[in-house]
Length: 423
Ligand code: GLY
Image (cartoon, rainbow, N blue to C red):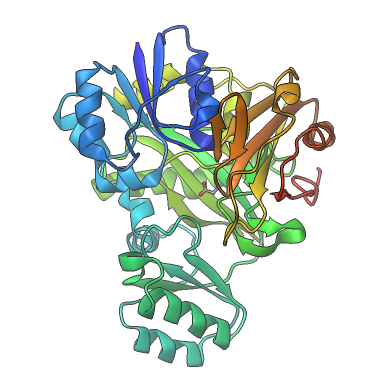
């Protein structure tokens, strides 16, 4: 079969890599992709959010299955457009993708169905939000309602920072219409974990837990990014906690989606915080996590095409996921200055050498190839994933491999997976 992957980052490279392993796949296209994927897939020069052009192209090229990476085309309704034309596509429809596209919708759904989440208020007028700040307890969390690429969430330790966030989001409109409404919620303390779940609307199959490290600097300092590294499995998740999350979060959330008539078919990625009171939902995402995908898929033994198809056909019932017992750690190499301003166009040295290591996967995010050389072309540049015998072994190996890579302004966190408790 011919498969089209939509998107261009490290997550999409990991998806392409996994799809390539299926014996049923003849050819993979990626729109728009990046130059680091071209040994596995042919690039198609169409932007990920240009839904009509993608649908026309998929129709013309007889694509058997399309897999959507990023949230924007999902929220814009790419699945509805493809399905209308009889094209098979993996991902939630426009209504279902609102669980990520509208934080107000997500929070109201959680509240209505009594699924644990932080208490919150919604504001449409900045003046009312500012009034609320006068009587609020701090820290609190301010979230732009719509899509803001991981930058629309501010943890305000005091009133000044909260006022500044409201001004930027609602008055200066730094995220455009995504900031028309905001959610202000209580700050919850605890460890954050990510869980991704295949669901066909009737059945659901959770993947292994992963943990992302969002802050740009070691020790969780500095602004949040799309993700600076991840690892899986998580040594502090035991069977009791797994069951609790299943019973108190996953099942109620998917039941709630059904009762709301969302017909959610695709991948749901839930950010969960483990508080002293139990697990609570931070937010929903209508897609695979990045970089979580770069550690979870390398550990999954199943043919991912079967999972995509059974999700679409609502036949996930009875499917078992088999896991490589090794530990995966991914460290993201970025351009210094990311997630704010950064330079690109730096030559990347050492790729030929690291591409030869058996237990290392190199996922490209922001790279471009000129002649036979790769150059930086984005904030997140490369994801290096190692499969080692245990977490400590993977950490030690991935940082050894990173020593072989070099470019001007290279930045990465040196503590991925290190600050976490071991059971
Ligand atoms: N890991 C953060 C995200 O995918 O949004």
